[in-house]
Image 1 (tube, helix red, strand yellow):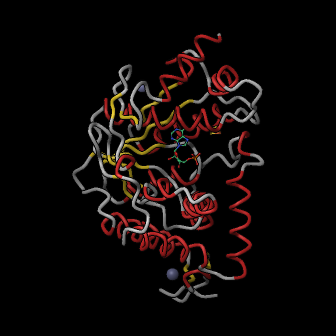
Image 2: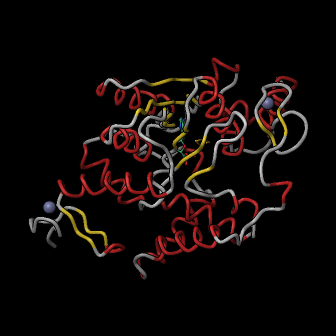
Length: 309
Ligand code: AMP
Ligand code: FES
Ligand code: ZN
Ligand code: ZN
């Protein structure tokens, strides 16, 4: 297989795009495509302040690397979740994220959930969902709340996450199986800013997971290989495996499913009922927007944890 651009031996073969590229041209192609998507979906401009949520994984570290290479003003945010299971998941991912920032002289904000709120994610989960051993739901609420809080408090225009195509398509499939139209209406490469909430963007949403792995490896980015130990056996992983089988038989199927969804969404197929269109209330404790009147799910969860500890 030869590189389409220069004819030397290809390092990456992307059957889904009928495109093979050598290392150098792949490492140029991926940021060029990212820049194209940033403009196409009007994610942010050159003068806006971007906060990249970095987990220490290949996607978010690569995203930070790409934005930096493209000349954007992008700082990082790492959330210490206190997940000591596995190989010491949180400590390792923090170390790799800090190392990445240090080597490139980038600004990284670190927020440790345990020292900020008194509980790590497994403890918070045990205190609020007794009997369950799957802290992912609790973790999702905390991550979303903290990303929004830091972006707002530090005055960032945009919050960027490293979700790739495989992430987006597995969520989409889950939402489709259960016809969660409100969630589908809110699944997009860009969610506009709203009353103190920074705009949210996913610049990697059109890249296959294996493209991101190739980018991180070829760029020599040191990232955490392990998935979060609590993700084992999750529906998301099950859907990803299913989708990989489909993709194997029909290269391009995942991307086509996602792009057709975006088109359908754009044409108004998934309009949520008016009352769900935007969060409408401010949480009386933390001020963040909520869907329903009263305290937000994060504040309610913290209160429950305090009453059980
Ligand atoms: P996940 O929810 O683990 O699939 O991660 C999706 C995206 O959320 C990642 O690509 C990151 O941008 C962000 N993210 C996940 N975990 C963290 C973390 N501990 N700190 C900061 N950002 C994170
Ligand atoms: Fe939050 Fe796994 S990263 S539970
Ligand atoms: Zn080449
Ligand atoms: Zn709140």
